[in-house]
Length: 338
Image 1 (cartoon, rainbow, N blue to C red):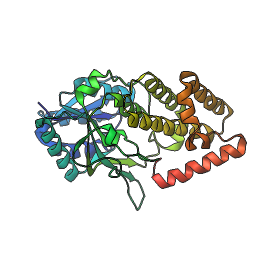
Image 2: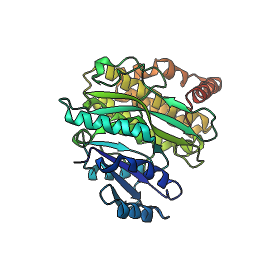
Image 3: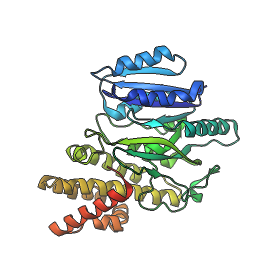
Image 4: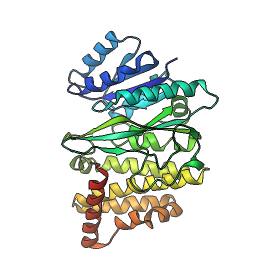
């Protein structure tokens, strides 16, 4: 059996997908690479088939009608045969030295007495034109090189979140928890990480800079102007996260607090994008989003709304909205996102 399945969602990725796939081939026979061609209209499908022909024991090409990033992840997960599962976007890549450490660790864990539900590693913001690369690392939050539970997780301050780039899940956990991402929706990577969390009991942290997250294309989904144009999809994901947390049975206090903070930052991002659009209809959507949260669970609403971040994005009037935008820009510069 393969140790690791890696899904590579691709849509019109002919210009950059080879760098991604080539970096993943270093995992050898212990890895299966599932290139999911999401209804591309360029040479993406042909490139995927070529890799599958040249590496028949490692690469498989999956072709589907266009369903968006989430549907591509769903297709990869449905076809995954490895013990663990990771998503690597087609414009990103992995570091070879860290890759070897990750694979050696997963192999060792599969032979050990404990099942690990989630493996976490660092990722690097490969921001185009940036002289300094921002590294998202967790060494102050998690014990290193050992199996641990949520009760051993230290406080994760603002900006320290487990993102899709940093996580590898046990495949069967994702399947058994019923994870299915919405179709034709961007920003579902937040759901990919968020929804399975209540089912995770055991974690493992490797302090290696494994995933390289490219930022810089004008059409990239995290580009601010693109986010504003797709704000309804961001809101859809945001509301789904509310529903997940309201309906989840979260026994660990540390995990519940972390999930509330995660929901808070996503709701803040939604709010700021709506404010920055400058449109009255989007300001109305912002009010409706917060009402949705309040109607879903008043206690959760108070926890999100009364925190520093919740207060900052709900300052009254035009001056308040301007202040919210200023705070967002400071955070943007400090954390290196968008």
